[in-house]
Image (tube, rainbow, N blue to C red; front, side):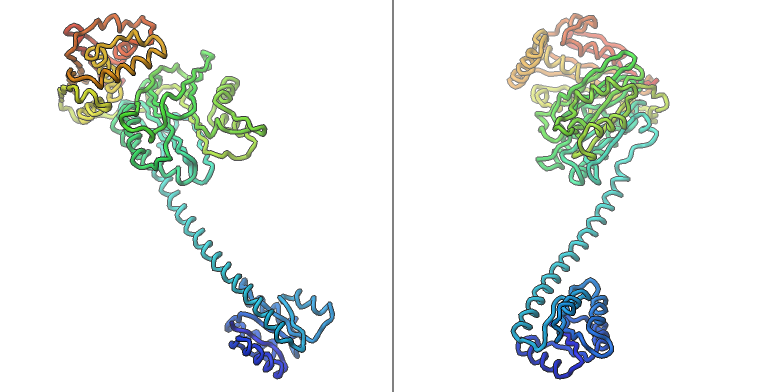
Length: 550
């Protein structure tokens, strides 16, 4: 420990040096005046100062604040050594920047005890300062890393203005980084794709998952993949990248080129609303699936809901950060609270819904990220379909036996085989839906010989699919042949699916007048196709799709 002794009396300095040396403090520096002391401090700041009060020239009271200024923010104990014993002088020692005082004549034990006490305080202060320096460095590093990540996010998760204009949206993060994500892209057929996702938690840890999801969404949109395929692929990606305690609740949607037909996959999100001012009603769409990144491939269900919106109808999507807003009495806003506000308001906007939740909440900020996305059914004529420059006709025939028919992703794998066919990107989403319906009917009715009458009720639906799994698991024979042929010159895609079952009366089940909860799949096939016909006693169904986008 380096000690500076400032005293105009040489005998006092010599006595202090001897006393301190005997106590183990051997690094002592002497100064005979205040000015000399300041010169020494300017060269090298000591660890402790023993400062006389009464000196010619500058007194100790004048020197102390100057030494303190030279030390800057560093902890430097200053002990006044003085023969003054009046209360005012002692108080002034502390007021001008002293930490303690020792009266003359010196008591060796008291003085060394005080020096050791201040040495401990100084060491503790130095330790704290070192920790503060480490903390400042860490804060600077974190700020730098956040700036880099924010730069990456701002360039990686970007929606095109020409596409974003079709959506009213408000995304408000609980922290710097948003664990919710909203991305949208045009489809090759002249429609729109969109994804609203909510990762577990909030902040950077949650937001980081948006990067692979956004990249995959952009690539799949460019290829014209169906919503079913997108949901399956996102689930694979998140299972691979996310830890087991993280997942993404999501709504994945496609808007047809007419701006009215909506295809949705929804998992783990609050219920969506279709709000119609003209028809004065609100339709609720509850989430039928679990969030993405939880279920394995053989458990995952990519089934979508397809419905039509009237002009100016609004599809309202929000994350649970909105519905879980809590008022001063501990009540949540809930899905019903959101629905009621949508019923009562005459001007439904994303920001308006957010402000309503903010006004309901007892806090000025939300505990979770909040997202509100609204799509209004409208003309999409400004979105031009992608033009294919490849005019090579293509055809593929695939025969699937019992082994392949049992595989849950077989339809996606079949469509992957034709993904490079010319013009297929314009109708890939429609093709997936049509293939799914035709394949399910061939498998369930043609091969497994199941009866759709079982699906008259919700309980019947469950029994139907439980029976389907049992029959499928025990199946040892049976085959389905799929033929897909594209003709870019005629702008058509021909599709046929044939099974080796006994056949059945397709026309009765597919009647568009039926109101049963089953048999609607064939009606959907007819609605999406230019032409549908049957052969071989119902064992083979053919359909013709147009790749022309009007």
